[in-house]
Image (cartoon, rainbow, N blue to C red; front, side, top):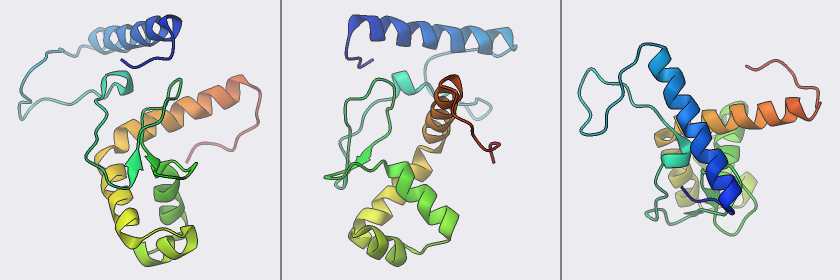
Amino acid sequence: MQAPSLKDAVLRASSVMLVLARELAGGKHLYLGERRESSERLVLPELEPLSSTWRWLVSRPHPWRRQLWVKGRKLLASQVWTEMRANQLTVEQAAEELDLPCEAVEEILRYCEANAALIALEAAEERRRLQDAGVPLAPAA
């Protein structure tokens, strides 16, 4: 559990415990091991491994974000993915608009599709933080 400080590590660990307690209270059974056909995977961003198998994506230290960023840019992978979905862009159009190689956009799509649950959790967390800060938001889609 990567955290910039001991305080952040304790907060993240507490957050994980609260999620697990909520799942158990909801009647779910938790176990560690091989995935069975009838099982459902619970995604906990704090426990997700960071991968180094990406050519165009990198991890960056952040207090709560775990998703990857586009290498050499201040751009989250999910921002590219969201832009493409919202504007119905092809890989080629997104590559041209964002000045990225098509190969990078294709990798971003693979990453985001494989990590959709993590990205959704981070979007919900960002929304919660903005609401807590008093920022008026449109209803969630």
